Length: 322
Image (cartoon, rainbow, N blue to C red; front, side, top):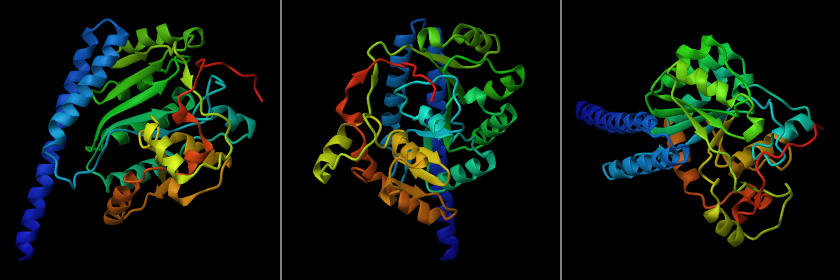
């Protein structure tokens, strides 16, 4: 009887691995083919369309037990070359309160491994700051190699604001079909964008320039408790483009919203248990907790934010240093 159970388990794992390999191959292929399209806006739109088509085309083959996250964020530093007033990662507040930190790579990889033990796949991992190229380059290379080693991670996006050029020592770590450097174009503020694009092109590193947000950023408002009812919170979270989409890891915690994680980290709101789950080295517990967490329709932090209201403000406005 035990042998039969072990055989069934081996077959189930083989099927799950085959499905994930199929998705990885298709998405990687489509992403690389987009480099032939010259229009950045059209390329970005097609990238999103390809991703959704491929994901939902093969999602029907997955059993209900298959848990796949479309995206997670990992913040590696709070130091930044810019000081954007409406940064939804709250980087200026880290300067104000002198609370800057750089992530410990060993601890981060351990926490990512614990998360993956409760999942079947993550379609994209975004590595961001602050500004990622302010992070220790040897440690960044070590992190990238660790992320590339996880078979459950399909794509890795490295986000930068186009103000710094990395050294040649990082090239071999970035030149990988799994990795794409994404450059946020903030106009004149992205002072080395063109130089960075040339550097990446010359070294055959996959990259994409995210066009300047001419229609502005979405405001999150002042970071105070609004006193909304649960019905209001549910209604707002259903409209929010951040809720259950950012999915950041901060320390040994997995959040559903970057603003929630950074507000808590800075002490700008109470530390509330329903905002996150802890990442533990117990796969069965992790899987159960992730399923429960992903089924939530709102979190306490929704009461501190107006993001779902969709009010726009000019993108990347710089503020005076604190």
